[in-house]
Image (cartoon, rainbow, N blue to C red; front, side, top):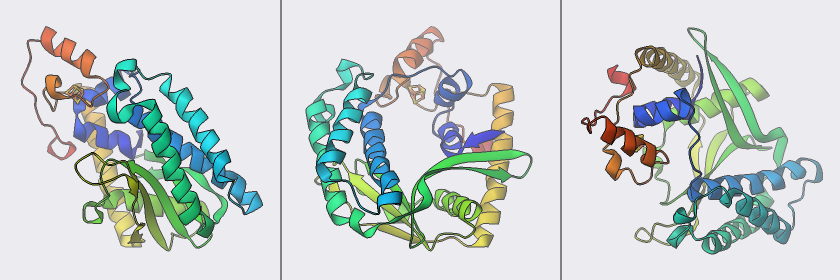
Length: 275
Ligand code: SF4
């Protein structure tokens, strides 16, 4: 089976959502959070791709124009009822420009992208004929691998997803012949109104995983994919949550309608490990 890590995680989050997205492939309405995060990513990619040749960052105003255009295009696909409060387009534009302004002044001048080191897509072979696909954001010439994140709250390194770190490190080794020196999360904190202001978090840095970590994680991922194949063959896709409360899920309307038609069956927690 070929899968991304986010696809595997999606089943553990809610099997019904996994079914809608990956099995039935039902298109979901775009959420403003996604449009915002993708626009920040694409703006940074736009800067770093040209920097491979020029070795210079673009003027801040040029990146801001690119960001605004990208965000506006992506927000066109977002239903109007989602574009309120902290998702108001004017607020998102101002917030994104503030993030990019700070990043380009404070971080970008110290980062030189490696050749082929921007938005790197990878495929990793796993045992049992599985394959893991993915992408990392930036490898710099100091062998630091960067992942850009937008988040409501500051990132807590104690809760870091070790598997994701191992996957990035392994991908770097396969693509560039050696693992990164370290991994760095650059986190753009949107602020959730209760947990502090919006801003650019200090870099969150992790040491590169060991070769033994990589072997262990590869075996675990292959086992998870075996289980996912089994779940799909059994069409084992219960709801993990009560649809009437899943305000953040893009499939909420469809899920709730089907849940009502089915007589509101009890939600059931199913993790990959318990299959
Ligand atoms: S609305 Fe809730 S239960 Fe339904 S698919 Fe989404 S997350 Fe799962």
